[in-house]
Each structure stands twice: as structure tokens, then as C-alpha cells.
Image (cartoon, rainbow, N blue to C red; front, top):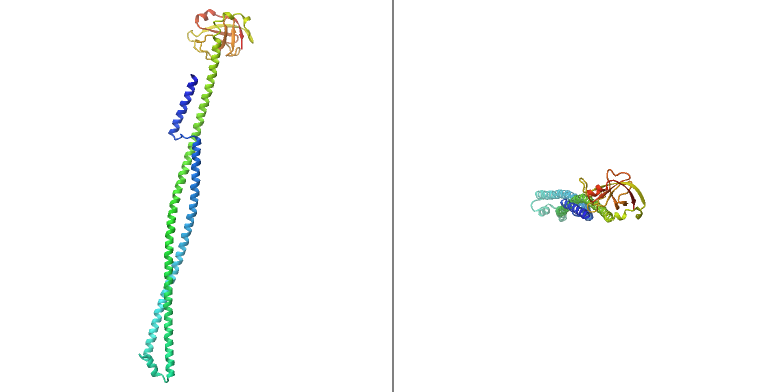
Length: 360
């Protein structure tokens, strides 16, 4: 019964600990928590590696943006320079047209409205006229070629400006695309950083839970070991009591048949003073010092353990075979105290000198 009570107490204790563990979220065993830690750590490593990759990508994006910014500035400078050249060419065109008009007006003033006829009239010969006409045509051709060159320069510069503006527009488009990539990467990096922070927080919580779970399991282990130890002690005590009880049942009823010391053999023989007592007397307990129920098994002898070891099977002349199962404050040296079922029997015994043989 005592063993069952001890086991029941341990089970109640373990159940209480499990309930306490449930309150703080420690239902998992240490092994389960360590498995979760491994899983969280694996995810942390994966997120960290992914974040490192995203950082490489964002660095490349920043480099692209830097390169595009440099190209944009260079293109703006070239457009500004081209615009200046275009304005210069347009001004040159205006100047040459103006010069041509001024020369033509001057020539008309000198030669008249009909230049060819005027030259013919002033020429002294046909040859002179032809030479004058050729010179005039050459002059007009030079002005025309010069004006055409300026016009072509304006066309070329305008085309170059359009190309630069197209390139500038393309750079702006590329910049928008790269900025879109940057925004996506920034969002992904923000998510990864949050996951890493959450993972680190979970790892800390798991570490705390692991320590608490280890302490809980250690406490449960110690409680079980203590219960097993107590159960083993109680079982040993129970077996010892059973052995004593089995021996004590043979004593009182057979004492008269065993009064002769010649009929008993033992390893040690003592001459001792024997008094008597009974559990029926006022103030006496039911159990002996070794746990024998004296009401159920009245045959028991109180001894000095330094003389007769407790638990020894002894023979007492006039009393019979019994067990050294009790002690007393007045029981010192070669003195023993014999237990009887009734006070009358103990009074009838009184004090006697007896022979005691230790049988085991």
C-alpha cells in the first residue's frame, strides 16, 4: 500500500509539472525543442544567404544607377554643346545670307538691275564680257556652296541633337527600370530582415524553453528516482517485517517446549537480565522501533543494538524464539525487555535472569 502511495505521489507530481509546463508553453520535450531550433536555424541560414545575395544585387543596381547618372550628365553636356553649335550654325547661315544680299545689292547698284546686260555694255570686247560673267557666276557659286554647307551643318547638328535627346530618353527609361528593380529589392530585403529578426527572437525563446524543459525533465527524473528509492526501501522493510512476523509467530505458543537451553543451538550465548512490557499499557505505541505491529505479532524483544543487532533471531529461556525488533531508553548492555500481548502477562514475568542465544 505504501509503495502504491509513493508511486501515486510521483505521478501526481509529474502531472502537476506537466500542467505547469503547459502554462508556460513547455509541452514539448528537450528533443522536440532542439529539433525546432535546428529547423529555425536552418531557415535563418537560408534567409541570411538570401539577404546576402540581395545585397549583392542591390549593390549592382546602385552601380547601374551611378553609371546611368554619369551618362545622363555626359549626355546633357553634349546636348548643351550641340545646341550651342546649332545656334552658331544658324547664326552663320543668317550672316552668310545677309552678306550675299548685301553684295547682290551693291552689285546691282554698280551694274544696274540687269547685271548681265550692264556688264555687256561696259565690256570693251566679248572676251571681257565672258570673263566678267564667269567671275560673277563663280562668285555666286561660292556663295551658294558656302550657304549649302552651312545648311548641311545645321541639318547634321540637328540630327546629332535628336540622337542625343533620344539617347537621353533611353537613359531615363533605363533609370526608371533600375529604380523599379531597386524598389523590389528594397522590399525583399526588408522582408528578409524582418524574417531574420523574427527567427533570432524565436531562437532566443527556444533557448529559454530548452533550459526550462531540461530543468523540468531533470526534476521529473530526480522525483522518479526518489520514488523508486523510497519504494525499494519500503519493499525491503516490508520483506524484513514479513520475515520477523513469520519468525515471531513461532515463539510464544512454543515457549514451553523450548525452555531447555540444550534444545537450542546458537552462534553466541549470553546471560542477561530480562524485564517485560506490553503495548496494551497506557502510553505505549503499536509499532516497534523496526516497524513491527506488536498487536498483530506480540513476540518481540527490545535489545541494546550494540549487544544484539536489530533483526537478529534469538532464543530466550522461558520466552522462546523471537526477534530482536525493538529498543528502549532503559535497555542498555546485558538487559532485554520482552513484549507480551497483555499487561497481566508482562506483570507476571517481572524481572528474571535468562539465557539468550543469538540464532543468526
